[in-house]
Length: 79
Image 1 (cartoon, rainbow, N blue to C red):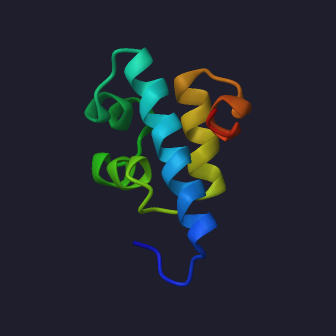
Image 2 (cartoon, rainbow, N blue to C red; image 1 turned 45 degrees about the horizontal axis):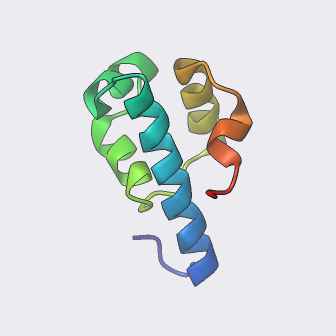
């Protein structure tokens, strides 16, 4: 887990990971399939989905293109 983060930042990472996992599952994709399609490692994606990784901007853009989604699909707060 990232150190030096506030509880709000940790929650943001957790929620982002949940949204990423939901979009992946909506497509019927496994983490392995998303990894193959995006070029990112499965273990990295797993860490992002668990809220343990602070995703880099270029990796975020790669996932948006791979999932063919609008950026707000990953960025909007959970309801």
